[in-house]
Image (cartoon, rainbow, N blue to C red; front, side, top):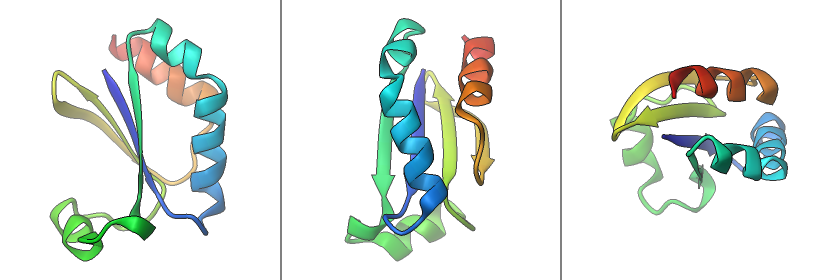
Length: 90
């Protein structure tokens, strides 16, 4: 399972979620999940990426399993809720 957060440096909710996940990275590892943060600010092909994935705002959160996105969330979400969701998808 993989948790991907797509965000931007000036997006406060993006930074909050990213930091809370990093603070609890051991819990993520314990459920067999990997974590990736995609910072739109440093992508060379930012516009192409946004268009290809139909992103409307940040943070956008993808939970994927076996290479397929099984859950997509937009906006701030409580990290406890996020982890519970992932636990349920195991």
